[in-house]
Image (spheres, rainbow, N blue to C red):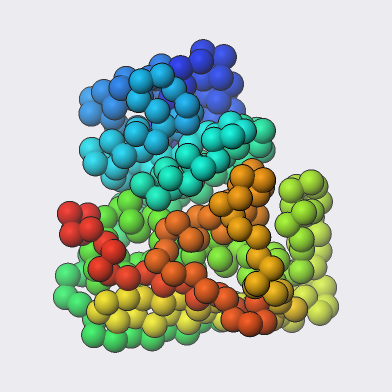
Length: 302
């Protein structure tokens, strides 16, 4: 049973958010009327995850993210953002938030987002850590268009860094989420050639068509290849699909306020916020995500 703390100074918004989460039998919901009250609960009765509004009197959602990361970095924080608060959400991601959900997409996106961050956090809590460093390592994997393998594959890749560098739970979770976003893009937008616009406008149709294409030629013949090159100072993950690709120079800026409210822009933002470098090949069917050890705070290593 997972316990989720909902933080919002507006009673109606607080109950709406909690109601969406409370529909799950395996989740219980607690409430805080302010960021300070939330921090008191983190100390006295820590939740498994926090969902907080961005704009609140006194301490706002951004400051709450910073405080939670200092006090309990294992607790993921998901932000709920209103229109016009997207740039604050970007800053919160940079300071440790696990994800964010625009209010206009709350009913559709919040349960799935919380489920994802809870799953990643729970998996990371059970990983053993290996302190002796690997000098150099290379791993190559290849999978078909199986959506059920994306999260386990991201976790497997993340474990290699965790065992060697001893990352804190917070940092492990961010690497895992960035990898899962990239793998998801390779599957849905790369191999299955599904548009971001369809996912935005017809969520159910998007996944229905994905299931159909995963069983049909030529899409079902395509593979996703993943290479992990690991050294003492950095790890590079290269994810390549067999789709038609795209022109990376035309990739929209995910920090643009008009794009931050879209699911596609949010995925790119997570990748760029959680990794030190994200770069595409010229064809656009291959992305490399780099995480450098020098950017892992010594205080967060275990």
